Image 1 (cartoon, one colour):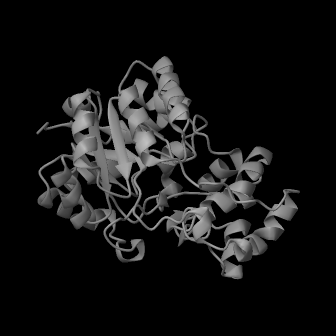
Image 2 (tube, rainbow, N blue to C red):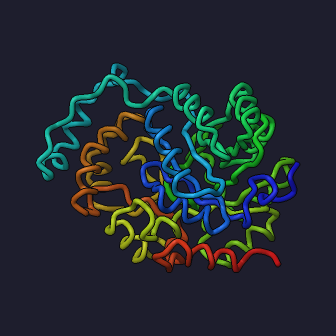
Length: 348
């Protein structure tokens, strides 16, 4: 086993960029990699061709290692034919109407085929494949390793971490309940897997024999120092980088992160049908008040129809404002400044 993430991933500093599904940018990924960390890019919803193009763009932007991330299927995803979306579309109608959008007609499929996504990633051979919502198959891990690709899995509980380590994953992210965005639990309901970072990381460290990367509530040098004191050998940071100008977040989203208090984030299924942490806005409140939420990924696709247009207009009331509980510690608007602050907390 590699003793450090530096050895494992051929990087200079054990700082990993959180892979934002839908909010990743080539610029931010490259900035973190160029600074000496492991930049990450979330490929949620990407077709095989788009994955190939994205990895090529990342290689053009940086000559340093980077990770790409996919969501594994958990088995509870619905297809368009599985669910009656009419009541949900009716509940969302005020949001479509406000933006002058037609009420959507469901597509043939909500998500691209995961096997096609993984094949495209393996063919493109990035330095690292990271996964959420499950355990990569033995075939995928073996294929990745045969191409020199390292594999990172993401756990929200000790049991998930053990399952990932046993799968052959090279490292495990222990993601505490403080973290922004989706709670990527896969062995139990996300609501039953809300273990905080301080409790989760040392228990995962004790349970697995692969490097552990701490995530959730880490936004400055103090969080980094704490993560290493808990036994982690690296950190994964999302919200602090999401606030920077290099991310794909809208200006309204970055402003919301800058202004949110410590109690200003909530867990909700409103925007995607899966539990996620973000800053409440009018879209979230409208959906929760209506009380009609489709299963994942139907809800994510339905809200995506107005979120995309709201993002183009800079309307922070009608997008997903993902943020973690340490958002108040996200002080910088440039990724290099965030990286320098985090690096200051690394052990000497």
